[in-house]
Length: 187
Image (cartoon, rainbow, N blue to C red; front, side):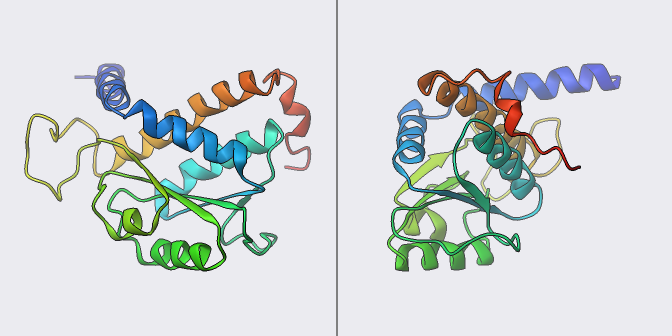
C-alpha cells in the first residue's frame, strides 16, 4: 500500500467516525458557542493543536476566543464557554481547568471518546467522538484503523471544528473568504 492509498483509507475511516457523532450533541455545542460571552479552548498534545485551529477560525468569523495557557489569555468569567478535547476524558490539566471554569460559573463542553469520564462529569455537555481507543475492548464500533494512536480522534476534532465554522459562518452571514481580513498579518 502506498501513502495515497493509506491516506484514502484513513479518510474513509475518519468519515465513518464523523458519521457516527450524535447530531444533537453538535447542535448543543453550536448553541453554546452562540450563547457564550467568550470562548476558551484547551487540550493537550495534538488535541490542543486541533483546537487551536478551531480557535483561529472562530476568531476569523468574529468570535472572541482564547487558548488556555497563552500568555495573553484573560481570566475566565461567568458566561464564558470552555471547550475541551481529550480522548480519554481524564487529562489532569483539563480536569483542573474544567473544575476552575465551573467555579467561575462558566460552561464546559468536552469532546471525548468517553461519555463516562471525569471531564464528562464536570461538563455541561459532551460531544462523543466514537473514535478507536485501545482503552476499550475491540468491537464492531471500536475497530482499530490504519492510523496510529489517537489520530482518528484528533483528526475528527479538526474536521468537526471546520464543519462548525461553515455552519456558524452561514448562520452569522459571514463570507469565509472575506473573514481572512482578521487573519494575522504579522507571522
